[in-house]
Structures are given as structure tokens and as C-alpha cells.
Length: 256
Image 1 (cartoon, rainbow, N blue to C red):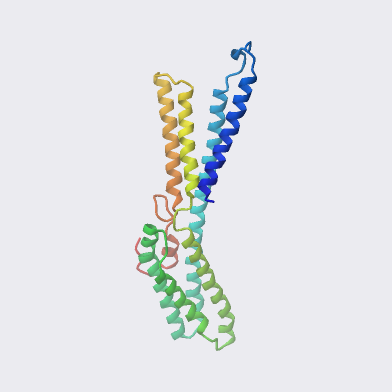
Image 2 (tube, rainbow, N blue to C red):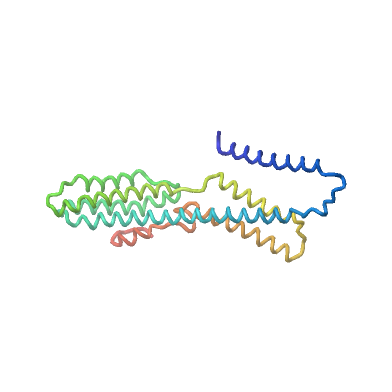
């Protein structure tokens, strides 16, 4: 059973239960009942809908902001790990060190100049980037240390490659949109209901009321846009950047 079918059935069941209770309660009310003595619930319901929707919006904004921050942190970890591999290879012989550093530079250059635009446009990383990282891994793991000093540096180098690989995997997972479709359905439907409740209060055409209604609608539209903008951490306005690579590899020709 799909999540959309479950959602539809749950919403229909909730509406049916509430309407049934209201209908049965109405039938039990006597003819001498005075509705004017019963408090009007329209304003209360409008207030509660606004409060609930505000909570949902706040949680959604916090979620996508946290996802963006996490995406930027994975980029920092990946750049730092590749920098550590390049620096710690200093203890290896010149030929091995040159090969490791050349492959690290090739990987970083490709990620920033080639893979980043693909990730922003299509929300995915490339196979070639994985192949270049695997080449760095092979450079590190295939070398057999010849001295104690090289042996002490071997495992930290392997660990740093593993950290870079893990960060790359996390970057791939967060490259696309993170907000599920059912959440967007709730956000948009909630916005329509919340704005629609303004008319349930019989808004008048005075300048003050029309101005407040317009500003209220514009605020909700802005918050929804903010969620949409943060939803894809690498491809929209306030996106995670490749700045950590620029800082750790200033000697490379990287596109800004």
C-alpha cells in the first residue's frame, strides 16, 4: 500500500469521524437550544490551524537548514581528508609521493571543475569521480612501507582515504532534494487552508485588513520558497559550496 493511499484513507477517516460526531450531536440537541449561548469556534479553529501550521513550517525550515549544514560539513571533511593524504605522503619515497599527490590533485580538480556542476544540475555524483578516488586508494594501499617511519604513516593515510570516501558517499546522498513529496503536499495544503481560513472570518475590504491578509499570504509564500531553496543543498540559491577545496588546495586551478 502506497504512502499516498494511506494518507488519503487516514485523512478521510478523520474527517468522517469528526463529521459523524458533529451530526449525531446536532440530532440530540433540543429545539429550545439557543446557539447564541454557545461560543463561536471559528476564531479558535483559525488560531489553532495557524499555530499548527507555524510549527510545521518551523520544523520544515529547521530540517532543510540542518541538511544544508550537514552537506557543507561533508564537503569540509572530504577536502580535509584529501589534504591530509597529500601532506602525510611526505614520508614516502619521491616517486610514490609524487604519484599520490598527482592523483589527489586530479581527483580534487575533477570534483570541483567537472563533478560539481553535474551534481548541481542532476543531483548526483559521477562514476569518474569514484574511479579517481579509487585510484588514490590504490596508490595508498598498494605501497608496502619500507621503514618504521613509513609504516607509522601507512594506517593514518588509509584512514584518511576512508574518511574521504565516506564523505563522498554522504555528499552523493545529499546532492538531490531531501524533502519527500508527501511533506510538500502537507505544506502546500496547509498553506491553502491557513490562508483560506482568513475568508472564514468574513474579511472586509478595508485597507488595513486587506494589507494584513496580503502580508500574511506573502509571508507564507516566502517561507515555502525558503524551504524549497534549502531543499537541494548543492543546486539552489543558498547552496553548499566547494570553498573547503579552494582553501585546502590553493595551488590548483579550480573554477570558482
